[in-house]
Structures are given as C-alpha cells and as structure tokens.
Image (cartoon, rainbow, N blue to C red):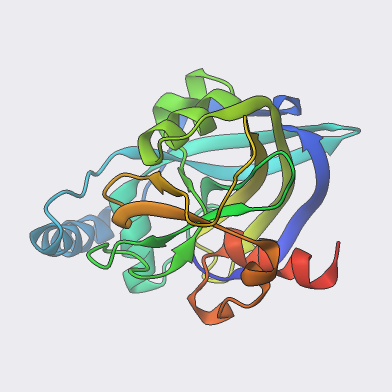
Length: 240
C-alpha cells in the first residue's frame, strides 16, 4: 500500500463492532483478452521474487456504517491481479484490496512500535511501517479481530491486549489499489526503553522492530512512510 489519498471514515469503535459480509460466488477478474498479459507479467515477477504466492485476497466492494457498527461487503481477487494493476494501472473494484495496519502502543502510550520493511521486498522496500497485512479469503470465515490477530502472530512476536483493539480510520490509498483499516491495540505491559527490540519475520529488515516515542514519530520523513504510520504521524502532529 502507498500514501493516503483520502480518509473514508474516521472515529473510534471497538474492532468487534466491525464485521464483513463475504460473497463466495463473486471473484473479480479481468477480461479474458487480458489473461495472457496477466500470466506473462506474473511469471516475470515470480522469477525475480520466487516466494510470491498467487492466493485469493479480499477486496472491498462497499461498506455501510449504522450507528456504531461498520459492515464491509467483500469478494475476492487473485493477488497476481492486484500486482498487474500496479504495473498496468488497471481498474479494480470500487475500493480495491482490503488490508489493515496496526498502531501498537504500550498501555501508557509512551511508545509506538514501528519497523523498516526488508530491502529485498518486492513492494516498498526500506519503507517505515507499522505491522499489518492484506486479508485473505480464509479470513472471511472468521471475525476481523481474529484475522488481524492471525496476521500479527505471523509478523511479530508480541503479546497484545485483544479487548483493546479499536478501529480508528479507514483510508483509501493514493494509487487506488486498496483500502486500509487503521486499528489500534495496546500491549500487555509498559515499555521501559526504546532500546527494547521486538522480533519480526522476514518482512522486516534485520527481522526486528523498534519502539519509538511520539516525538520521534513526528520527526520521521513522510516520503518514506507507509500509510498507517503516515496517518499516526499526522494525528500526533495535529494533536488529535
């Protein structure tokens, strides 16, 4: 995901109040005449990044907010189709792929967890980001909270207070590739020092993330931030 283009929704509701409706019979595909082009582009990309997996991910068709409950209406798209969109500037469903990024803080909100994306990544290498991911078809059988927890367990080794999960924004990225849920969660204990490191998977440079104080977040170079961290930076700067 890239820079923020627009904020679709902003507020604060428990993540348990956000649900999705999945249409198992609806998959977004390009026209048959484009399939050969998609295969060629995807095969070329896989030669450079052999670990890529062409799985089915969720895309957001629409959403509805009633009082304090948000409903997301989804279908699926192949991951390769998303990559082709990036390379060919093609149109995907109205709101595009659906993902999330997590603002992780200690209970005192004295520190935030950030990391540098691996320089070998096929997407946004070296960018600063907060943990997150793209929702997959398998996630639709579970709650959004469970889906977020699955992805976080794959990315980082940290214990969080699940009941503290809240949705604070839904943003559309500048490339129109997708929509990102910005969520917040607290760890189970306070952070004692910015020297403390958190172990991450291969998506992070040196497989580590670090704690950073709010003032340091404000000083980060906006040009090198993924949208979740960019959103956090903007909120800290405005004091909102």
